[in-house]
Image (cartoon, rainbow, N blue to C red; front, side, top):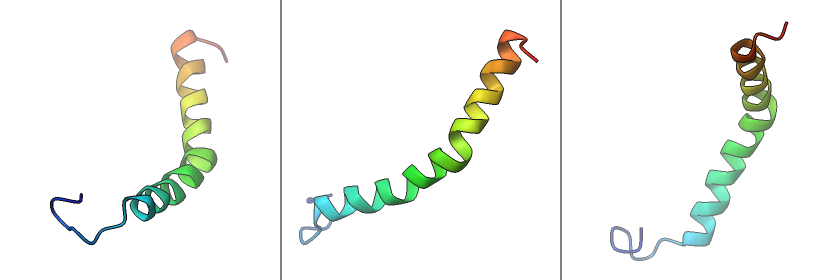
Length: 44
């Protein structure tokens, strides 16, 4: 990131990426992963 945009703040980029992906994983990701695992193991 620093080579492309020298004035970029890597800490801010990391914070923004986590602030977008973390709520998605909590609300949608974990239930979807859990359903997929139950489906693969054949648990109803």
